[in-house]
Length: 606
Image (tube, rainbow, N blue to C red; front, side):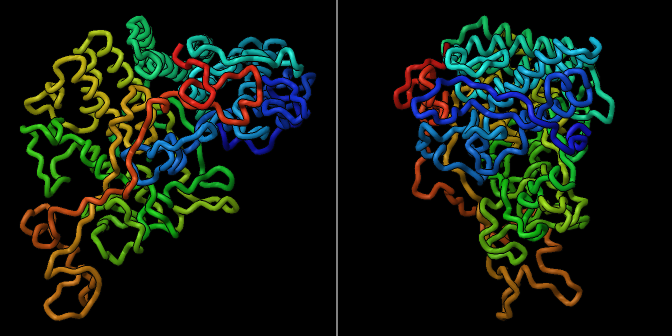
């Protein structure tokens, strides 16, 4: 595997990027970073193996990891973990530090850009065969483009450095480029990558970027540039360009064998499946694992797990019925009491609710319980009343789910940064915006058919979209459920200028109803749901909660909906559509701050 190959760093290379002046105090600049992971030029660019080590390290620095629980960009109305400063409108100029926090190579994205610039120039001047040069340069072009894209979607235009800089005061005075200039450079890099990269890689190189992945990301970049975040005046030429790029990406993916995995529930469980375009590889080994599964599992099936990644009632309500109709549609046949019945099958693949059969740790008939007072789950670990099923492997034990940086372990589940379903829905959105409603529906129909939604009388629920505006809403909802808990909700709402759709996160609290009680008490006349009989069977174990009479006899309905925000109010100001440059970056006099923030003069929408 790409990242399991990388065991040791190669030795010192160059000084990292500089974009600042020499300040009067002679303080070391944010961008003047020694890169300890390279080799001397005389050796480096003659040896494909050495370059590959350098490249592997660059993949590790650039390709995103599992989203940070409660991070700003993973905060929305779909999950309990949240950055409250974001939700309550109190982000400050130094809150969004993705671009960098220090001169450390791992905490400075211009170090990543420097690596790519140095590599592209070194490979061009090196002694490798043209085939090796192309294969290596294509990857560095992609990684440089992706680094810039990750910055531009947050900040708008940033200093655009496309060659290795000399560390002197004059050359390092680089101001922020216009966002349009950054987008053009990103697209150019992705075009180069698409031409140089292969259709597939050998199994030993899983995780490397392909030509189809480069085209898919190009389509995504141009979708961002066309979307309201950066296109508030709705320039249709941008949408046309985005449509062309995404259509090319879709056609290339199909031609190269990418397809939707037949079972939505297995997307993260089936490693290296044909839906995956951009991925960060993991393994249950020391330094190559993560603890996401242990943190996501309920307390009862984890090792000190916290029940993170808990879906909210807001997300539960977003799923359509199995016929594709929203639960608010009069023809949907939604049951507000037994809300789980006849929903979009992605609901069952994603949401674990009170009483659902959820095999974990190899327990095929295990049921998950989340009613108030249940003894299986430690008090306080049930936050929303729901659990996320998508990132939990049913076959591994609670002990094996936990990761330790000293010994390894954990599920080793890969992080999928981009998959073919996103290409499909990106194309759907662009088709809709360029006046092709029928093609947009054709694309959404693909994801809904894969999900198991039935055609019914409303064409998989697509009949409710009769014009561009209604189709926009349908696509946004489709993205919410298709990519649930994949860290895309926040980005989608920013991109479409729909942050106002984030409402207070709600928890669903269900409690036993007399004569049923939680616990294992002994009071006469009470039935204790947690108390096993002589055969080890609890009263709840044999209850058929799909029977309305049984369910309403055992639990109090309707439930209590608890506002997770407490007394706080959601406040998402428009200035969130372009974040400010962090303080350490602003040490450079040539850099302007973003309009809308303290001292801001830079327009990120040009």
